[in-house]
Image 1: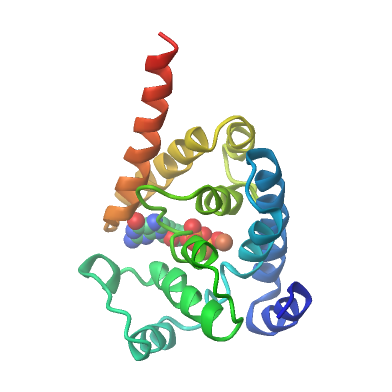
Image 2 (image 1 turned 120 degrees about the vertical axis):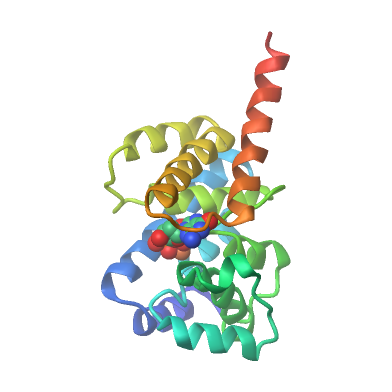
Length: 195
Ligand code: DGI
Ligand code: FE
Ligand code: FE
C-alpha cells in the first residue's frame, strides 16, 4: 500500500482534526528526517499512520490488543491513552502491511518513547510535539530545540509530559522515565566532552 491509500483509510477512521494532525506530523517527521539523516519517506509514512487507532473506543482497542496476543503491563492496563500506540502498531502491520521493524517500533513507542530509541523513533516522537497545528505554551521553544538537537527536544517534551502526569495523578510509564533519562544522559555526555 502507498501513502495515498493510507490517507483514504485514515480519513475514514479519524476525526477531521486528527486526520489533519496526522498529515502535519508526517510533514514534520519528513523535515526532521532530512535534518538528522534518516529515511524521509519512512518518517513521512510513520507520521501519517502513527495515530491510526486513536479515535477508536478504548474498549475496542483493548480487545484488539488482547486478540492479537499482546500482553499489557500493569503500567498500561489502566492508562487508556497509551493503548493507541500498541493497537496502532498492530493495525499498521496487519491492515497497512507495514513490515519494517523500525517503522513499527516508531509507532509503538511514539507516546512514551523508550530507552535506546532509533533515529526514526526519535524523529517521529518529536514530530508529534511540533506538528503545524500544535499551539500549546512553549511550542516555539520545542520547535527551536527540535532543530538543534533531538535529545534536547526529548528532554523538553518529556519534562513537560511528566510534570503534567504528576499534576494529574497519573501513572508515569517506565518507558517514559527511561526515555527521559536516556536523552538526559546523552546531553550530559555531550556537555562533559566540551568541558
Ligand atoms: O496521540 P497524540 O495526542 O498526538 O499524542 P501522544 O500519542 O503523545 O499521546 C499523549 C497522551 O498520552 C497524553 O494524554 C498523555 C499520555 N501519556 C504519555 N505518556 C504517558 C501518558 N499517560 C500515562 N498515564 N503515562 C505515560 O507515561
Ligand atoms: Fe499518539
Ligand atoms: Fe499524534
